[in-house]
Structure formats: C-alpha cells, structure tokens
Length: 204
Length: 96
Length: 247
Ligand SMILES: Cc1cc2nc3c(=O)[nH]c(=O)nc-3n(C[C@H](O)[C@H](O)[C@H](O)COP(=O)(O)OP(=O)(O)OC[C@H]3O[C@@H](n4cnc5c(N)ncnc54)[C@H](O)[C@@H]3O)c2cc1C
Ligand SMILES: [Zn+2]
Image 1 (cartoon, helix red, strand yellow):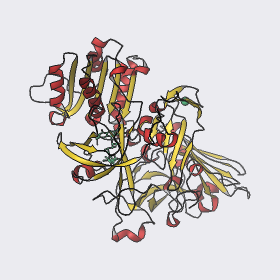
Image 2 (tube, chains in turn brown, blue, green; image 1 turned 45 degrees about the horizontal axis):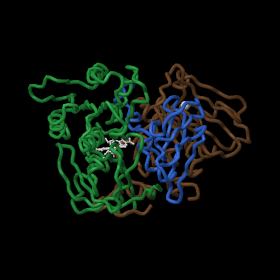
Image 3 (cartoon, rainbow over the protein chains, first blue to last red; image 1 turned 180 degrees about the vertical axis):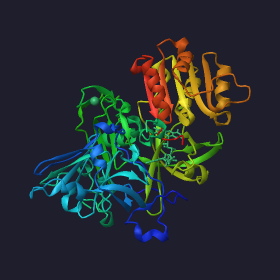
Image 4 (cartoon, rainbow over the protein chains, first blue to last red; image 1 turned 90 degrees about the horizontal axis):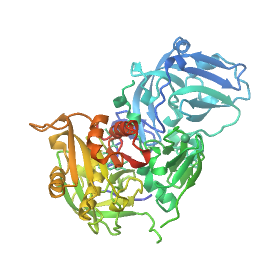
C-alpha cells in the first residue's frame, strides 16, 4: 500500500493542543462524518422498540414512548472512528445500559452482547464493557433529536471503543455466551476495537 | 427528516461501477458487467448497478431491489477481504 | 487477449486549464497509457508524508482518440479533501498516482449504437463529454442529445465546445437548464431536471434512447426515478453517481 508521497499533501492534522487526547493514528475533525454501510432506515417511532433478549430470565421490550420515560443522563465524550477521525467533546442525552440491564436478569452464562440494528447491522461487545457507565443508548445529540444519518432515532454509544461498535439505528441487545463477530468484526476488523491500543484489524 | 437533501447518507451512495478498481484488483478483470444474483430476492443486477457504500470501514455492495448486502470488501494494510454471502452467484462472460 | 494487471502508476501533470470558477481540467502523461472506453474513470490516490492515504475516482474527460494522455476535469468542493488539493496545490510537472482506466458499466461507444440521451448535472458532464468527443472524433451521426443542469451560466463546463459541436453537427443538440441563475435573456429551462423536461428532450428518440445519467447522487436519484416512472426499460438506463458533490 506504500505510495508515492504527494507533494504538498499534508493529509489530516493532529493539533498539538489536543495531541494527548487523540489515540494513535487518529486525526482531529470538527464536523461529524457520516459512516455509511447502507441506506438510512426510517422506522416510524410508533413501530420502533428496543429489546433486551438472549441469555436473560425474561426478555424486555420498550416502545418508544416507554423508552422516553427511562431515566437519562448527559454524556460528553470523545469518539474515535477506525477510518481515522476523532471528534472531541460530543454531547449526548442517553439511557445508560446499566439502567436497561436492571430490567432483566442476566443469566450467569451471558458474557457477551450482540447489538443489532435496523438494516441488519450487528456488532459484538463484552458484557463487562457495557456496564458501569461505559455504554449508553442515545437519542439526542447536541441537545437535538439524533438525526437519522447519525443513527436516529437511537444509537448505541460505547466511547472507549472504535465508533463502529456504537451501532446506529439500534433496536436491541442480545446477551450471548460466546463472542461472535458482528458485521465488521467478521470481515477483517478487530474483535475488540480499543483505539488506544490501536486494535483496528484482526491480528493487530 | 424526510428531506432527502438533508440525508448525507443517501448523498454518499454511489454505483457499483465506482468500485470497479477494487473489484478489478481482486478479480483481475472488469466485474462491473458481471451479473450478481441476490441471495435474498433472487433478482439479477449488473455489479456496476449495485448500490455502493464506500465511506465506511469497508465497501458494501447492496441489491438495488431489496437492499440486501451482496458483497463486502475490506482492505487492511496486510490483506484484502471479500465476502459475498449475499450473492447466490456471480456470472461473468468469458474474457474477450 | 490477456488484460494487463491494474496497477497504480505515477501520471505527470502536463497541463492545467481552468474551465469555470469551480472546475479545472488536468492533463496527465501516463507511463502505461491504455486506450479507455468513453465513460470510464481513473482512481486517484494521495499519500501524506506520515503514510496517510486517501483515494477518489475521476471520470476521463478526453476521448480515447487522444493518445498517450488523459484529461480529468475536477470540480473544487470547498470543504473536500482531494479536490481542493488538485485545484490549489497540484502543478504542471507534479506526479499523481492514478489507477485505470476502470469500469465497463458506464460506457458508451459508437459501436453500441443510439440514439443517445446524456443527462448530467454539474461535473457529471465529464464522462458524458468523453462520449461526445469520441462520437465527434468518429464522425458518428447517431442522434445524440445532452440535457445538462448547472447552477448558473458561469458554471457550465465545456459550453463553447458543446455549442461548437452542435453548430457543426445537426444530429447533436445540447439542452441546458439552470437551477439558480440563468443567463440574461434566457428562455430555456430554469429548474431542476424533472419528468416533463426529460420527456420533452427525449421525444424525438421515442423510447429507444440509451440513457446515461451522471452527477451528484441526489440528482441522479431524482432523474433515475423519473425515468423509471416514465417506464423506460431499465436496461437502457445507466447511472454514475458521484457522491455528495453539491454542498
Ligand atoms: C465513478 C466516479 C467518477 C467521478 N468523476 C468525477 C469527475 O469527473 N469530476 C469530479 O469533479 N468529480 C468526480 N467524482 C467525484 C469525486 O470522486 C469526489 O467525490 C469529489 O471530487 C469530492 O472529493 P473531495 O475529496 O474533494 O471531497 P470529500 O472530502 O469527499 O467531501 C465531499 C463533500 O461531502 C462531504 N462529505 C464527504 N464525506 C462525508 C461523510 N463521511 N460524512 C459527511 N459528509 C461527508 C464533505 O463535507 C464535502 O462537502 C466522481 C465520483 C465517482 C464515484
Ligand atoms: Zn435482492
């Protein structure tokens, strides 16, 4: 993949002021790039639901209306995409995954989660990295309803992992026993995806 | 929200023809005129006419009829991955 | 015939010519030049000193009859990554990595026959121009029309050449539409391309036209939907979406 260096092409920037906040190999952006893998699903809110299922005592499903009544928190966090951009200080209003898990009783065998979305997207996560405030389901970004292009009505956000783990258009979490790769993890991307360890590709 | 203008995700979509270079690098020939039969809906489309999403961790080619993911390509520094589970088959004419 | 493997090669910029306020044409001499088919494109790859790379596709504007060189015409997208580099930094004598010619789908050549209806928006006219230049170079009289949408009179790429082709060739006719600022005294179309406009321009061709649609994705979506509603056989329609080129 080595290439001829393009005279005068500086690529992207890692400004010194925020250098220590940028994981290795990442560049700063101030806009919000859209990562696209398929058309934007437009599920009407009256047909939207969120489910926790799999290795739980009894699955729970919330309607949009019910989901809105769950306690929320605001989070200000940095996000890093494996396509090499990092965006600092993004502000979300969200329901913590801890709150959602309180509604079910997770079977002791359940150690991983497969998040699934409208449009067929999936991503896998260790359950112990979803709890204790580490992950949330957001429906507002920057004090406004989350736009469909960025995953609205609701998306998962897992700030400490590459952003492909933060599934857009999320519809549920399936608690599972084994760590099965999701949409990108099954095609060359890292099973875990920690940006600070630069876990981009399988084998990294 | 229904405003298509605002849908950057749609605006970023291109045709399968736009990834002709990546496909040719893998197959050693032009694949845009090859037929992909969708494993989801069994309809045929030329690969050049598939819906292509190229601004993400990888390339996703989808069926224009049912949006099923026909093929995905990921290029990492050490390997190229091609997955085509969503295709029942690819059919191509003999090379001229 | 065994096809040569598609490889990146360093093209040398031989000329840069402004076309409009926002577009420039770049000529490249290629060490491994290969005749292309009108409508094909090249991939362009930029590499930064730290190894960061990015790549984009650009249609070939020149006809295959021009030997040893290719010409690309690029619109400058103000907040873009690659097109501002090509416009503001690249100079004659510089080298640029290119891979091509590629894509057999969005291709027209005289042997495919006509009549030919080309529909373009903004820089989407580029591959259509390669088809028209090829048609002219072959002295083809297959009937051809282009319906070309621009924001304003100053944004029309290749205007003189298109009008010149039409003056010299009664079987070719260009139609322009302006979505923002038509030229003074303009009596033609002044709106986005729609089904009525397409039907008017296509009328003499009946339903036999081979249609090539190219431009920003949202324009191509709208035109392709209109053509399908008009029940034009889908096999006669080819599209090339450029992505988000119109901010
Ligand atoms: C087959 C093909 C042929 C083409 N031929 C030509 C041609 O002949 N001439 C020509 O001028 N162009 C052509 N294009 C378009 C060209 O490839 C580039 O897309 C265009 O030059 C813009 O690239 P850029 O790097 O300058 O801008 P980019 O950095 O790609 O940005 C373009 C615009 O989209 C926005 N954007 C980009 N990515 C995202 C994202 N992830 N999320 C949100 N917003 C985003 C940017 O903010 C900007 O407004 C062609 C495209 C294809 C697929
Ligand atoms: Zn299908």
